[in-house]
Image 1 (cartoon, rainbow, N blue to C red):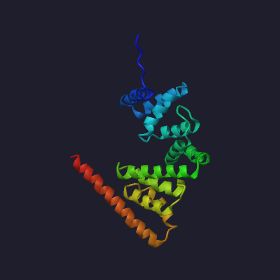
Image 2: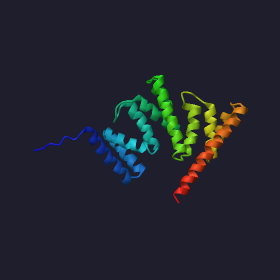
Image 3: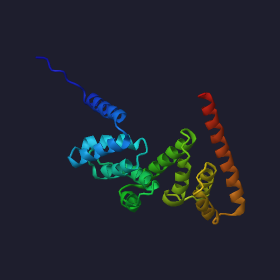
Image 4: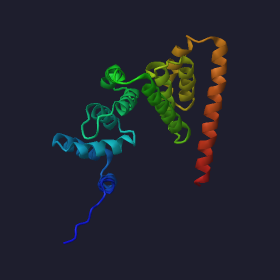
Length: 214
């Protein structure tokens, strides 16, 4: 009898392929419930894969679950750095449980690691707005710089709130004006010009992509 030895990374790959194929058959809500069922049944690795897949699509509850699973080491290895990443992303979705957990996770990390995650969050949100035409990412960036960044930056917050308003998120108008009250008029004029450049460039790129697809 001949036994085939399959490398571990191939086993992981094939198991992931199987789970990913399920996303084609189930909508996000049903797929999420499958992950919850796996979790309730103690099949934590399977639930982790489901929540990770959905988190890549911005599924809010899955992002919240990942923040906890990375912190506790459930279904995956314990990883405070990744827990901070998903806790911040979850907080940007307005989840109060995640907002209240930020300091708990920060206390587990040194300053250098925190700044690495900070840079990753900012780069991710900018990419979502510029490359993926995700207009809500501009609002999240503004909210990030006003409330969550380790280096609060009201100028950048005003800048991205301005971009968010121009992109159609008019609920951001009051937030933009509130932040603007703490900035000098000369700085506001500069930020308004910068916001115009960002918005105009994104609008041009979006229209160009739309035209290419016709």
